[in-house]
Amino acid sequence: MPLNIVVFGECGAGKSSLINLMRGHDVAAVSNGANGCTLHATPYDCKSSTGTSYRFWDTAGLNEGDGGRVPNVEAIVRLYQLIMNLNDGISLLVFVMRAPRIKDASVQNWVLFREIICRSQVPAVLAITGLENEENMDSWWVKNQHSFRAHGIVPAAHACVSGTRGKRNRDGTYKFDEEHQESRVRMLGMIERHHLRQPWRPRGVEWFREVVSVSYESRGPCRSPRERREVRRVAGQGIDQLKSRCGMSDQEARELAERLKKG
Ligand SMILES: Nc1nc2c(ncn2[C@@H]2O[C@H](COP(=O)(O)OP(=O)(O)OP(=O)(O)O)[C@@H](O)[C@H]2O)c(=O)[nH]1
Ligand SMILES: [Mg+2]
Image 1 (cartoon, rainbow, N blue to C red):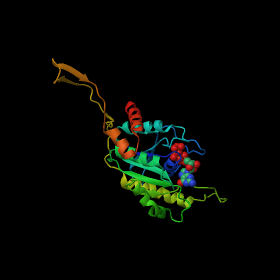
Image 2 (tube, rainbow, N blue to C red; image 1 turned 180 degrees about the vertical axis):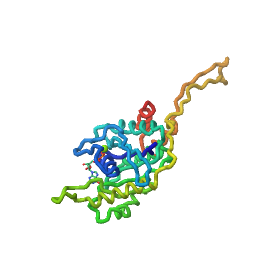
Image 3 (cartoon, helix red, strand yellow; image 1 turned 30 degrees about the horizontal axis):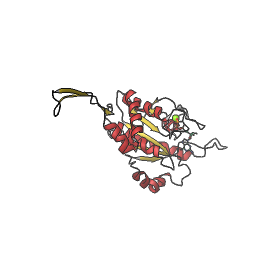
Image 4 (cartoon, rainbow, N blue to C red; image 1 turned 120 degrees about the vertical axis):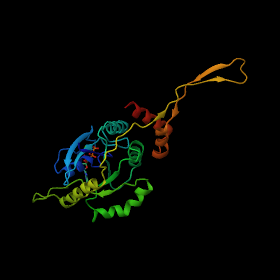
């Protein structure tokens, strides 16, 4: 069976472009406007130079609440469902971000999918796109890695890349052909080195710990023992983590957890 590699990240970051780049031809639709393009998770199979079979999952963009055609909560739910339904397990998370700004939503999504949903059991690598105009694409990471660390984004590996070939030259070549080709080698090398050989099989996150009923005999001032039943709902670990690690408010965390639980 091919190894599942889930490519996720912001709307328009370049996820579909990178999948096309790695496969060597354009099959995944790439957006050319302000609206999000990829609406549903789509698999694309690819064989590495060493013969490993990968299944890249192109996913709907996660956004900061504007722009994308798939509302953010819906995009999160779809990605969660995809990961939960990968019966053959998951071997790698590839998080795609567009340079230069680290958005709050990106930090949240990194923590949510890497730590809370995949429980840090699946390696997560980072692809930073939009670096075609850098003198040396890798030097961008050297200059910026401290910001990622400060935001709690510490990937197993990173690749500074360009997902675009740029404008076509008169001779039929493209402006960023060299950077594009270099990016392909970087992406495939990173994936080859960091994927799990034994895929991790996801388990549902315990969003709520439900204490359905507690019965006990009351003591004390009552003349006769009286049984009381209480129905309580106690926040489970999932919600606590959304709050403490994703910086969500109690209400945001509850609403998201409720949605994810329903599926
Ligand atoms: N300058 C530049 N543009 C890029 C790069 N990668 C992708 N693009 C462009 O960015 C736009 C969005 O690219 P997509 O690959 O569709 O992005 P996506 O993450 O799949 O987008 P959604 O599916 O909408 O979430 C397209 O116009 C691409 O040509 C890059 O590295 N540099
Ligand atoms: Mg896309």
